[in-house]
Image 1 (cartoon, rainbow, N blue to C red):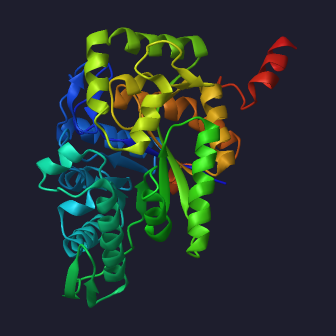
Image 2 (cartoon, rainbow, N blue to C red; image 1 turned 180 degrees about the horizontal axis):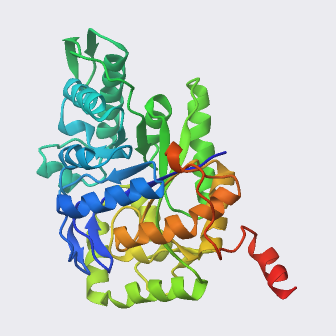
Length: 393
């Protein structure tokens, strides 16, 4: 299996420290000292494209810039990078969303991916005029995606449901390719929606056993619908030439966060209705000790950041091993980020991707650079136990 890697566009600002916020929280924590200008986001996007990332996730919410508009402008300064646009289906009509996606696809030459975010924060949803309960939001998303997918198959579409009534909906132009739908959710209401509609089910970075259980859950639901779903994982990453250097960087990030900030952010996250967010919090419970919750899986980001709260931390070889472990469970796509996003993209792409390429698990998506090789001096891809034996001989 060949793996796909996506990067992340911090449309709330970037820093050499963890920028907190998300899931109903305002950005801040350690502070974003690099504003999310198009020039800076363009640097990240172009670097991700050159380094071999397939796409870049762009978040949604009150704490960041609008993903549709920001990425549409960044498409002009990139050539092949795809944009995984997060959006909330209840905040616009399904017909308009299908039309926007078709326009985006046709003008970007097929570079749109869509991350459907139902929303787990009732107080933030209300700020947008949405007063439905969480389960009602999932039911609405189910109808929304049904209408959108029908429109992409060709209209006219008539639909009558609990949340939408559509008559004679058509698109002026079909998308050159249908955008793949990405979807995450850990609650009981999320599973059936993912199984019926989505192409890729995304999970946040939990320990492998928990990720494996989620994959089995969604796979069983999808099989009952006569469908197959691909799987992806959302993680941060801190990878260096040595494990000691990587953990020193994790310690630097942790030491920059004061206890008052952690307490304030955790209090805010406690309001979340998201089951996935509760699972992230359960990994650390607001404590600064014992943050390595699984080998090379560090929960420090989750102390001040909603959403994805874990990072793969270690040497390039160790991080590659953990990726291979998730891949063995069925994960085929990795949506990654780092601190800062520009520099960490290079650490990962130059340190880890060549090892995965050597193992036959990755190839550069751009044909002219598909033959990239491992850098001179890199350690061959071996399990840690074999590396110790090799170094001793």
